[in-house]
Length: 513
Image (cartoon, rainbow, N blue to C red; front, side):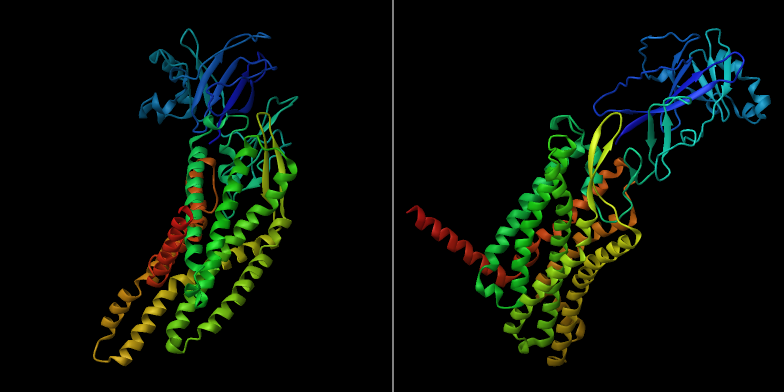
């Protein structure tokens, strides 16, 4: 994630209390040094990490203008807590009583440079005396009441009296230079999962591991999805695989599978190249921002519903048995496919209307974010629609196979009453295992996406990106399972696939000869 440290400038005065200025400094990726330009005089310079660990970096009596100071943040500069230096007896004393023994601490620990308690920060000087001053550990940072940080972000200035630079530190689930962007949504977005990990103006080889691994994962998904789609299309192009509506649902699903991985790979590389500041065409970025996420959501939802339609038709096949009308099934399937795609498009039409590019500029780097900003009412509608498109197909796939097996077992029980219902049930489980495999695969792949999206709530910081990246990428796998979940477990579809492969091989041989 983004590494930042607090820098405390402390200035001492003879006839007044000391002055403390705190700023925040970001450490750029692949670097271990920072440069500070200081215009205000100071006598003590301290660094604070986010785990309340303090380091004394600079200590001098007089401020020298245009001075170049180089120092390191090393272990012997670390300020120790008084709780690690005194025993329980001393610690049990009152604050005023206990502070009388602080000069002994510097003499007892000869290598100690500084230490602190709940109220004071103490510096050990060259004569091993302790010089203590009040130090607020839980200071509120609001830039003297003029903070422009949003959503509870802390504001840091480079000066109390005449500030020229301010920096915001964002709470969990918020990001951006002003903490103006939120990850509080169960709809995973690749932009805020990977965005801050991709470093501008740095070559790809120097990018963080998560970016390189994302390229590998996305390439694997693209290749796998392309192969799945092509093999599935080859299977369902045969007329005998489309003698019922299921064949039409799966044929359209195969084309959608290819479309999904193509749009995904475009979306991924557009994000990487734009965040690396290689791709800067505003019109291209705007059009992709408006359309790509909507297209992905429409395609994924369409595939989920098509799989659900396959499950529903299989239930009707069992209920109707020999009375099942295959011709009518095909006609209904064509109408349902068109209706589903139209319905999903209409319910996602609000997405491009609320997506736009935003420039996010701070002192260290400039980024362009593609963001969606909904009003509260549109956000509720979007949440509801997303739940509908995800949960209903999920429930259909989960329950359909159970209905099918129970219905078949009951019908067999009527025909063969001497055999128990339990034995009929076991027999049907064996005979319909290919249906069971298909439904189980889809349900299994949907569960992690469901858990990650709803339980975690939001991506609290870039350090959580691996989990959310896993949840995002796994959401594409069900769309790439047509061949594995439906073709391979089915004898009818497998035989059809073998016929197609033989035809292709024969044509290839004839073409060569």
